[in-house]
Length: 409
Picture 1 (cartoon, rainbow, N blue to C red):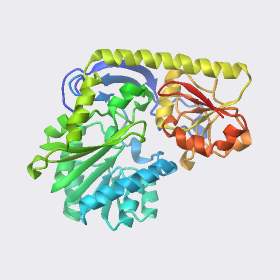
Picture 2: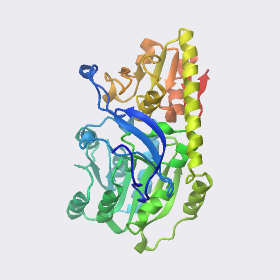
Picture 3: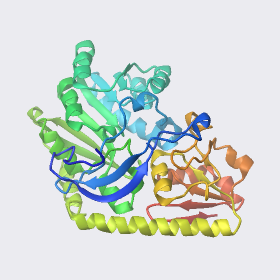
Picture 4: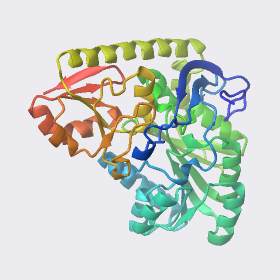
């Protein structure tokens, strides 16, 4: 199935197809050198939106077991260290000695910080290779996909969770309703389910189409989480805005209605913002498509000019969202000589679809490109600061989103 027949959050029929992106290999499926000449599996990337709740979504087509070996780790970005410091304090204060469970705990960055604050923690993650990195930080990890059966076993072994948190994992879940059954099984009566995800309103307003890829099957509006929670007698009681995380994110707190919490005023405020932004209006998405196409033409024009000048161009950030962008816009080895990334798990591999070699950031010193195309544009401030020497020697950045621009010293 390459498109959805009902919304995976509110179950409304026939989400509106507004941006078919073509066939893509999974964005995290980097290519090993020995496989460079082999065909990659590719799946249609059909971007739909539910005009009943504002959930932007694609069909879940990734084969079972894909995330057993995973290549994204948040520890590569200094921004995420600071961010998780703050979240760890929020969770530890709320749990007050109760169990904190992080579903999709990745390399344990968040729970390690909770542990430093004296919290009782447990991670759940299906990727054995990443779980080992978490264990090295002293984090207890249960290696598994999170299901209702697993939740029952975890509750029997560890007791109910005062806080269940998922950061940039909920948008990977194809079957949200089964996942939520697991959450309500494990969650204490007075517990909170805390979700951090990019917000669909920012995608719409900032042209962030590249945050759609096969591993990111959903981009949530707050309304979609409100409607999803209603199926499980949960309601949204608070929201934190996270403007500097992944291009604009939100931290959403759901609790059992039976706990009696009154939602904070910001919940209604943000729901009104979404309505005012036209998130339930098909015309909003038609306008987004026009902007996406115009941005692509502008970016290719910039890169063509640099190529005509004989300049060497490299890409910064072999990110999943960056792979969507360069694949859809046709920015391959015809423009980019190589990509650099801080994550050592990616070094020596090649980008999916475009097959561009990925090197350590230190390659910028030895290869000396003239132009850096910033695929990881959502971390541009951090990258610009780290690459002050590149700017000082006359280097230029191309920042593709929200609107393409050239940055030079």
